[in-house]
Image (cartoon, rainbow, N blue to C red):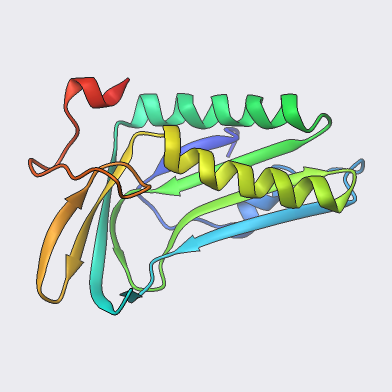
Length: 155
């Protein structure tokens, strides 16, 4: 894999993402692995389906990497996000951040997942045991009843 930031419809290799940030200058590599959970506030999920506007989503992931580099100089970041149908415990996202010192790698990794939820056009369909719904932004503050965002939501 030559890209540092990508959207895929295949399972994500944690090792592959980590290799992209591994380097001699790094004293820390922090990984965040987001998985599909079975219960959310007592409501049972059967499976999820992620969709993305792939070209924009990958550009936003790259932007996020630049933001991290500006905030924490000498940082190297790689992010892979999976789309399609995911089962319980499947990996949805892997973030790897390498830095010279551990505190920056923790902070940058946390920043990355929060910013993904804010700016990257990825949406999901929750399939609960009692129904289903498209969730708009990943902070789950907006629903997409038609199954995808409208043009104004893609800005």
